[in-house]
Image (cartoon, rainbow, N blue to C red; front, side, top):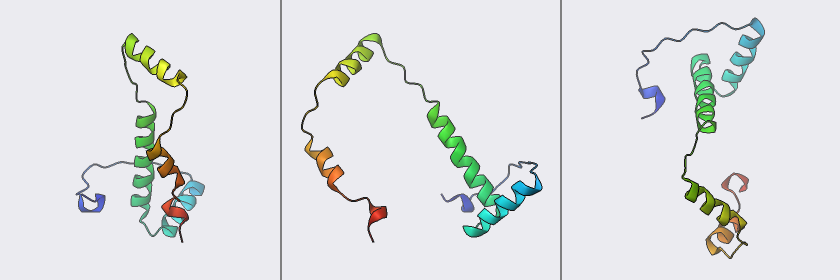
Length: 94
C-alpha cells in the first residue's frame, strides 16, 4: 500500500538549524514533495540501509568452509550471467 494511503498516527519531532531547514525545503520543492514527506522518505531510506548494513549471517563451520572453497574455485562459464551483463541498463536507454 502506498505510504500516502496510510494514516499517519505516530508523531515525530525534530529541531534543525535555519540553514538545514532551507536546504531541506529546497530539496523537497525540487521533487514536488511536502517537507514532511521528503524528510520521512529520506529518513526511511537511510534507516532501511542502516538495517541492511547490519545484517549478520550465521553459518556453521562446515558451511563457512564450503563458502571459502567456492570462492577459491576457478571461474566457470555462466551463460545467464553473461546474458545479464550484455544488456544495457534501462536507465541508460533513451
